[in-house]
Length: 359
Image (cartoon, rainbow, N blue to C red; front, side):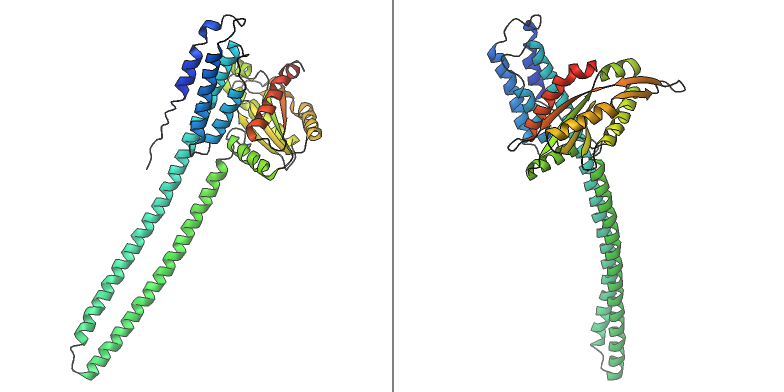
């Protein structure tokens, strides 16, 4: 059906081109940025967010919300390095959105192909069945026409009785085959529905850590907002994770992510949603307010921070790495949307970076 799906993201180039204009200002943070340049970058982000918000994929809304948060984080008071960082952050979000959308479209294409194969097989069976019974009924019709020309009453009666019995057997056979076909279709459709449910569940799980993925987090976050539930969104960002990947390799980094995810899941309550937001960033969604948020922070710092063993090379002894994380807290209030809650948690997390790194 579809061998491969390619997405061309035209909004990326204008954002990159806008930030190229920052080059003359990068050598000094003292030189004020032209308000027109800042306005241009903000407009690029807004247009990109609006365009993607109108798209019908599952992940478009996520990208739009992220870009709006980035757009709101910059102003004429921003330094050149901050604008470059915002641009790089926007490109990372667009790249991640592209990957998620490609995976989603490939999955849907495969599901449609499976359904089309079921319909095609059903059509073949029905057609074959109809051809067989049409042939039998056509022969019976020809015999009935010939019977109408008989003059011998005894023979006419005998032929009619035989024809009625033959028709009865044909109808019974058609009924049995139809029932068999119905049961076969029910079994096949039940199997397909089960596969579809498994695929939908798999699409909500982060393959590396087994936690809820970003799509699952966003769905639950928006559902809780619609219900008006008091809740906390906690962002947990590992410290110095890039240095681990650079020094010990990405396999070591993956081990840290899996172990950290398991420990984070252990300290959460059963009703909490624990997920991987992306990269080395995790999210915990839970009911409550500031008191519950402080209690969760203490549990994470006491039980999840610590020493983690990592196998750097096959056959080599494990090394131990000390892991801490910056923790950001967003407390939802009436009227607040998901982007605003994320922005609150994100700002809180960056404020906590110095404290958590020195712990």
